[in-house]
Image (cartoon, rainbow, N blue to C red; front, side, top):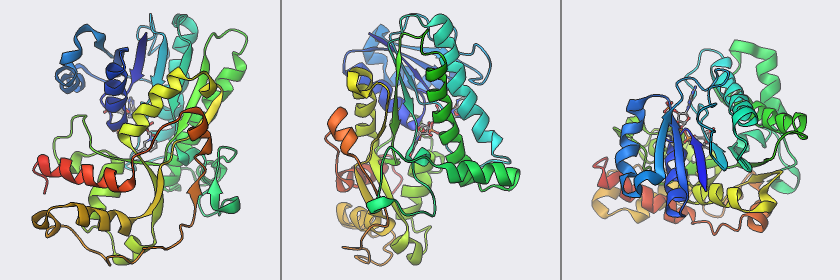
Length: 342
Ligand code: NDP
């Protein structure tokens, strides 16, 4: 079977492409320019003609994916901006929402062979910032309306974080609305994946540590490099999944019939930043550990998490055996060392 992966040169996209190729699929990846595909061409050269690239310069344009969807059986839409460097929320919302509707419209017109569309959404579509979930756990019944409201109310003054969360929420909603609207004329169903923070070794093109994608730069690299205060390290909590496991989830979501029509949280473990730091220090060699920040070692040991995610649907439908936070941190530190970043 042939799979179209949008955003193939991204942190997650590249791992999705690699995992699909390893599982025997043919993959057509989209990139914004020929030069953004060069690293991928050499990375996946061993897969011969099972890997190809197509340039889609502007994902928001009508018909942007018309050529890309021809002859494919499955679509994995990962392309969407994840950064906070914006002037107005629309800088994130327009590519997120129109990128999603434009790929779905192209499938409607030219993707007669498509059986399943997998959308890389986020727990940003699920959690409600500032609120505590029932029983301490967010599940798939929750939507991040507060972020959408903040953007509606504040416009350009909305925080970039709220703008990102709104972009993901509105894009996921647009996908479900599209499916509902075209139910009688489409031959495919939608599987949505909602991962929290994604960590683990990158395989896409990363020229230097400062060019890492947002989750590995702001929320991993900056944690182990000491860019966060002790108070933040001991209080900021999140949940994570390893990028390699999220890629496996993208394959499983394409394969398992029960994933169709579902949004599924893909979360391995909750953490505090201090825990990441402690694990980085304990897994690194003494000479690297000497260069790592320390914070307050052990300060969050046994501390309850403010919120976690219910991953029972993922376990039931996708059956992914998640790596531990420890393995993800260890492998990321080893990867940074191999690149000469420590
Ligand atoms: P990256 O920034 O590494 O990759 C993003 C991909 O989307 C790149 O291929 C990028 O292309 C493409 N893209 C971004 N903006 C545009 C645009 N305006 N037009 C066309 N293409 C665009 O991020 P990730 O791999 O981390 O993110 C991939 C997906 O996963 C996103 O949908 C993100 O929201 C989601 N996600 C990520 C999480 C994480 O922790 N990393 C957590 C939860 C969800 P280009 O290189 O040309 O900019």
